[in-house]
Length: 448
Image (cartoon, rainbow, N blue to C red; front, side, top):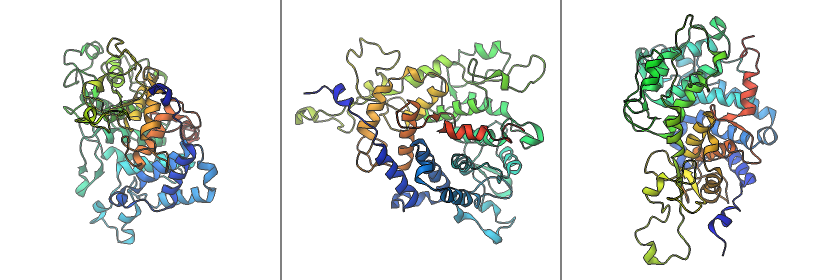
């Protein structure tokens, strides 16, 4: 009988079935479970179109006419005052007025996904109201540096102080400002230092580890306890998805700690004024991310009913086993045998979930530490247990049906681990390197 490790070696990416899955999502009706997501069509469009790009078939499985048509459809959701709505159904058309415009607002998430989708489609963004969009973005920022989701009645900022909005705001800023300065970049910028300060305040750190900020001449604003990850907002639980958003935002702002910060791209503040950066301990953050790799132990086919009793046969990894895998820093005395399957969890004492292979893995890729994970065990977990072999896509957990979010992030995770047959992914923007290079190569983005 083959060992687990030998059986795991046969795990393969069924690229043709993933292609059929995404083309079905693109050209046919989605299952009725997606009805509540009607107002988030821009998000669904991004995952679908960008997934085809990761698979390397966007330009061979769709026509120029189709891609131009999708771009035209997206531009129908642009508002004259800046930003994009989430779907055409909210458009009041000629009935829109000052009195009702709060009920048809631009949405930060929709704007981020819209712009990213246009870039993937090869649109030059010349039809985007860049100045208006960037001015709208400024109005979404609060005094504490955080961002809301939209502007409600009387211009009130609506939406929680959420790390996801911070990431999307920096993504919109990065895509629309480029390397231009002043009027070419849309005029006044957001308060970058305030945003970095908010991200820092959401980091979960040791209260006694503030020497780096003190020596830099900055006010220590890190809060909470011990593990150097990032929560949704100050005093919230550490979370891999929020950690990705914080790290991604810092990367797009060029405010990661050195040597990850490109000092040649930092505008001069004059004198010896220090630049406020994020992550109080790069080593601590990396350690927390690597520790999210989680062993998955499938039930043995020949186990007796007595042995199965009381076990969760969907994922029989115990809470204790969730903390250690064969990744970097593993104690060999604790794990004397190879673990063939190991995904990632989003928080301590949680099971492995497809999406966290990207949220944690993508964070490590941005920090240039992806080599520290056990990529082979992660790949086996994804391809053997959450990949849907028959219809394509990935499920959230082993045995779960595929859904658009996890199917996209499963491909994204494999791409950053250099899976053969997939285009390389830029982990910060979660689009292909091809798409990112197209954007940064546009003359207006270069400030010309």
